[in-house]
Image (cartoon, rainbow over all chains, first blue to last red; front, side, top):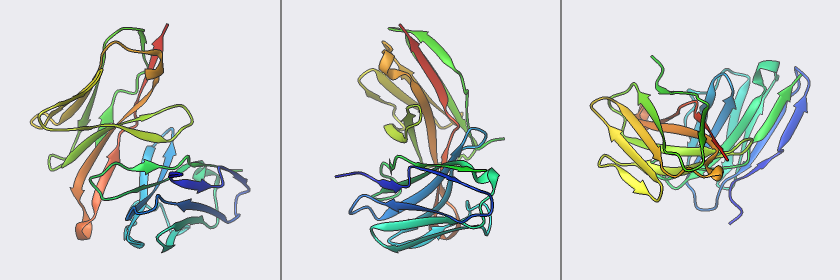
Length: 113
Length: 114
């Protein structure tokens, strides 16, 4: 299995631009998670899906952030408009269930200038 | 009080040393516990789950103390390859509408020195 796939691996954009991050979970995993990691705040859960349905988005910082999962093999996290404080590493992870190991993708390193 | 707290380190130890990390959590209803390892500029990976009775995996031992709400990780005979950041992870149980809350500590950085 290829593991969790994320794209792009690096993204540099200017403030105000739209950013779309993509994730392909491991086949057969029913749960998909989006995290953000910064030095100041560590790893934070933004939102997670179960069987393509968003279950808890209480970690999404504000309305500029949105996430979708149109099918079992694809999810996006969109930031519009982006701001410098959004600069972070964004990880996608998937798992069989909430009590099972979460497998993380390699992350997208986002820099907003 | 932060939900999951860890000493950020860094812990600098010589090869062969024994090192221990502690982690405290605030929610007494927390249901499950894990240690993840994160190498520099890489993604976190599960190191081991933490069971109530304590568990061991080779050189690694994890302990849980529910009464005091802390988790520990002991690494014996440290190797250079153990150098990484170790993340304490707590599943704080159901939030709203049956959701769950997996909370990560900020991690403890370990450097094993030749």
